[in-house]
Length: 256
Image 1: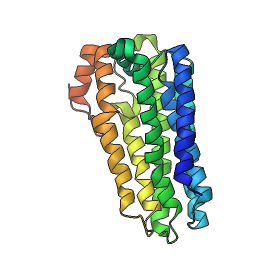
Image 2: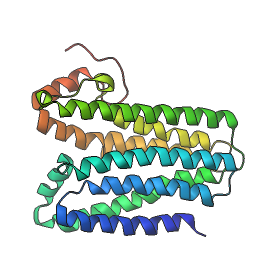
Image 3: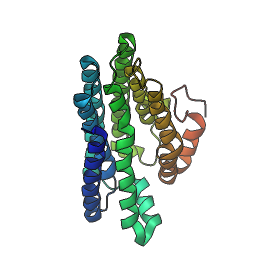
């Protein structure tokens, strides 16, 4: 049974359904929800179908399930109860009359990302010689990252609910020490997989997972688009926030 092939087939089907959904509602944020739930299902699937040690596959399945189910539910609540994210509105306006085909290609690209970024789960699930200390450290990192991301999301949501904060950058909690703590914890979470796979056939290759995720978040799909949207919506206050607060790795802010 070709497990990665099954993942890509189901990812494409789910993404196409999401594209049809956004065609009627003009809310492309649904692609993030499908991506999260696609990853959530891929992890346990690889854990069940893998050939590695049972306790390792159980850890893998539970960690992936917990991380991406929380992320998927959080994103679903935001997409179903709110307007289209500013990043996607900007894309829609830029593509104009080509928005339909443009988003179709973009959605299909996200299906390929489900397949590509879930391959570390498959590699971990084949590990027949896991290192127990590395597994313990991996679980600790994953749990800390889960707590950190959930906390930072709640802090930002509470900040946005206050009408007095409209047009201002959030400087509460984790957001005082990083402009993108949610992205930082997302990246930190990916460090768990090379440790889970340590001792196995793919132990070196698995370090590509946090490296690729860092590049995506820092240079491509994450921070650049979010920063542009933040400058459009928060203007001078966000420019001041940029000058005083680290962009990614949490650290103490500079004085204004």
